Image (cartoon, rainbow, N blue to C red):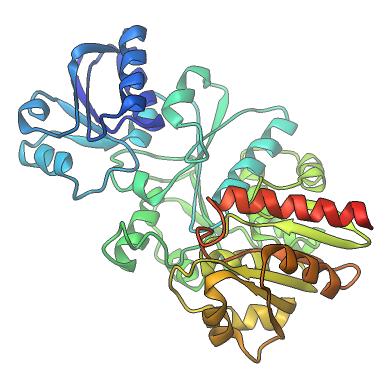
Length: 425
């Protein structure tokens, strides 16, 4: 029985506290926020018997509080250089992530999925493919329901399909998936990681503890991952693009689909059942979500794509004849990196929002660009310009805050405008 301090009281912190209590540890919580929502969470944990009223500090992190601990569990949002982490390191208190905590109590094999783009879609598909083949697949992690909160549902004959982030992987110790997947690696989260090398290192920790009999699936089309494959020791490194020839045999080019099929197949999923799942898959909301087909034109909502690399992922995942709607509040980066993909896949670009100058600068002359004065005009113009059998893709590559509250609102309004077009047609 240990004294365990949980840093952070969002969803992952709540579930970590419950799991620690379940294994009979004494739970302490330190949280900088002290608003009404935080206090409600504390009251709930006290009511559940997880937390004693005196074992909480809100509004600060103090050495006096933290030095009581035998173990520290950090929520994904806690930076490696955060004050409580430094305090624990100074006192030589072991520090683990919520992901590592859940792993220590998971009785089932794990499929872990990471990457800069496509994690949620791939994780979801793996779960559906396994379920369709009769497996008890529990989908969790960074996808929205923390791994710690699902341990009570996971049995020995289950398969845990876990979406993991670089933040969670930073503090693993023994975390060992049966199957690990790295979909791609490109510039992201450099506000959290010191540099690109640190970000890459964090992602590659997913296979740190894998060994003989485990599988690591990498993306052959990602230059960095292709290089890494040759240096991997321990698990068998495979390229999901060519594994069991799924892509060539079934004419599948979508990398999310191939990564999902490879992982699920390795664990015993039936090929026919997997293809059936793909046939019926409509996408995750705001992530390459198929909205409607109007007069032979598909509309795809990828509002979640707020980085330039995410737009590239979307373009690689779809067939050609695309009218691409992009723009919003510029987050940095070079739209020119998309030139080859735009040349190959896109017929027409419609730019919106504050980032119109940067889009024009990066892609002028590659394909025609129309600068829309409103979101409604962009969607309407997209439909006019799209070829029958083609698609209108909203994949902004920018944040939404110049026009919308968040990417979810942007995606919802896109769908409403598409439905208006459908009714008028």
